[in-house]
Image (cartoon, rainbow, N blue to C red; front, side, top):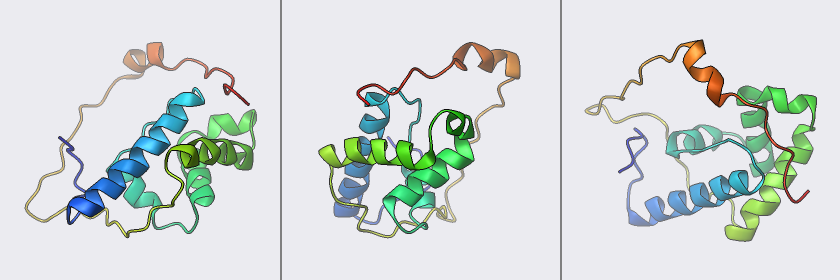
Length: 129
């Protein structure tokens, strides 16, 4: 069950969103990137024109450390190449990231830095590039 507050309006929209998410997340996995997008991330990035630009904005905002080794253009093109093998079309619907008024947004407990450190390891080189 998707606990994201972004709720697609109908089954066709939900299928489109799921296909996009699966394609992006598979591309990240194939490249050895520890990204994982959900409906909220996709909805937030949908406000930016162009898939490459969306990916670049995400990397710059959430994984800027990668830009020390790779250019944003290189990373976004590598991701898009893999994503388009699974689902070539860009997102064709407009999503809103505003939660419905009657639904609470689940809160995740804060994790201390010492609890996060074991999971923050260096990313491997991009596979297949």
